[in-house]
Image (cartoon, rainbow, N blue to C red; front, side):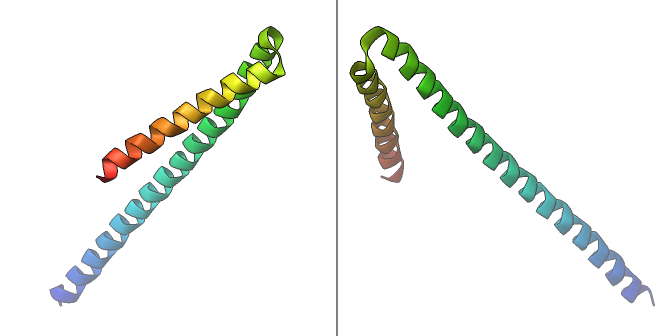
Length: 87
């Protein structure tokens, strides 16, 4: 008589902990997506702001060269760091 009741109570507790774990995973995924979106939008706006500021000082060609060199160096640094992590 007590065995089946204990099994029901244990399965309810396990289901509750699984629901909590699934909710935590969903929250972390949404926070990660939100943070990635914020970084992407921020980098776009800051890039255009830097380009506009440099364009007033150097002209469109110089501004494009400096902004392009910045993103190129940033990408190169990322690939170097990613390669070091893999090896």
